[in-house]
Length: 163
Length: 32
Image 1 (cartoon, rainbow over the protein chains, first blue to last red):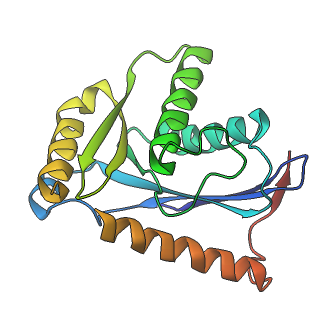
Image 2: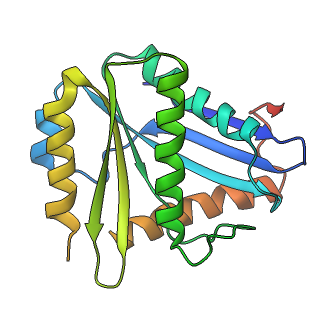
C-alpha cells in the first residue's frame, strides 16, 4: 500500500505534516496473522512551523487526508496513537495531558466528519492503556465488517502494553 | 507504550529536521 504524505500551510502560516503508512509495530505476531488481507495504517502528524491555535480549515484538511486513504481502501484499519511527548501550544486546557487533549480532539474530528458526510458503517474505538504514571490513548477506525479485528487490535494493545 | 511513543516522537523529530534543513522537496505545500 502506498504511503500518503501531505503538508498543509494554514492562513496564519503554521505548517502541518501528516503521513499515513502501514504500521505493524504495535501489534503481536498472532494478531498480525489474524488480519489476513487487512492493512493497519498508522498516522504520524506534526506541526513543523508555528504555534497558533489550529483552525477549522487545518482540521478539515487533516480529516480529508485520513478519510481519503480509508475510503479508497476497503481493507484498511486506521490506528492513531496520541502523542504524549509534544505539548499543545496555546490551549486553555494545558492542565490536561497532551495525549488526552489529542484523543478528545481526534474523536471530535471523527464524529464531525462522519456526521457531515452521513457515514454510518464506520466506527472509532478509543483504547485507553494504563501506564505506570499516565494513560495512553490509541484510536482505531474501522468498518463494521472489521469490528472483530478492531476488538482484537484493542485487546492486543491493552494486553501488550498495560502496566 | 511509552517506548513506542518515544520512538514515534523521534521519527517526527527527524521529519522536523528534514524540513528545517530544506530537504522535504518532493511534497507540495498546500496553502489553506
